[in-house]
Image (tube, rainbow, N blue to C red; front, side, top):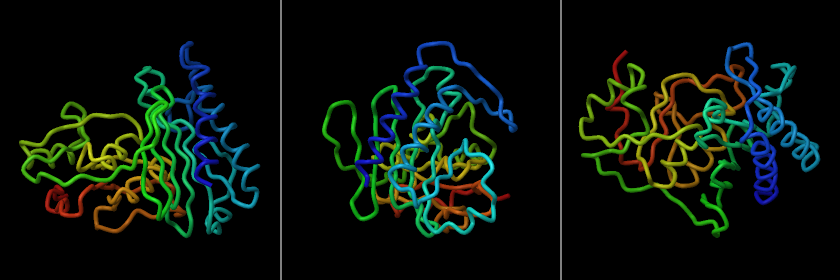
Length: 260
């Protein structure tokens, strides 16, 4: 099934790129976050294709409307989709935006595809089969987390835009190397061994993390809540708590957490 989902993500990426070079038609959603015609085009492409591929598996997308909470809480298996993660990056034309498709089974992400269509950079994984990265026409290559240099951890963060909790963590790591990236590609940097930790203390939603969590886990890493539990899906509240995406298990990230 992973090849089918990669193809669907590619088709959504093509739909996004058709509007990339032109002026973005921007609306505001209820939470004041931006919505473009590319978000809608990718959503329609993915939902239609997934419904045809697996008519018995429901789809929850960031742009889905009208799904009652009681109904989705009964889903043991569902597709979790962010058709365009990083809409602000899309508008700014940084290229650091992604298509995200995950399969959730019993609260766990078991398949994930993250595609950055502007650079034709793709990460994908399925439970038990490892994680892979593809750039352009090259063959996909297996990826895994890296051994961590505890004296100089590589943190996905920005000193200029770090919130107070991340800033407090960085104060304990004066020699840390900071790595910057947009959208769900932050998790993928950890998965491919280009970073060690990605602390995320500001809100995300389930569709922001599902696909990338599968990729990171299959590469040997973890996405945890701050009490150390694996981030689970299919919750009543779709907002994620604060999380840490961690690479090598020898990193004692709990000791770096700021006290409230």
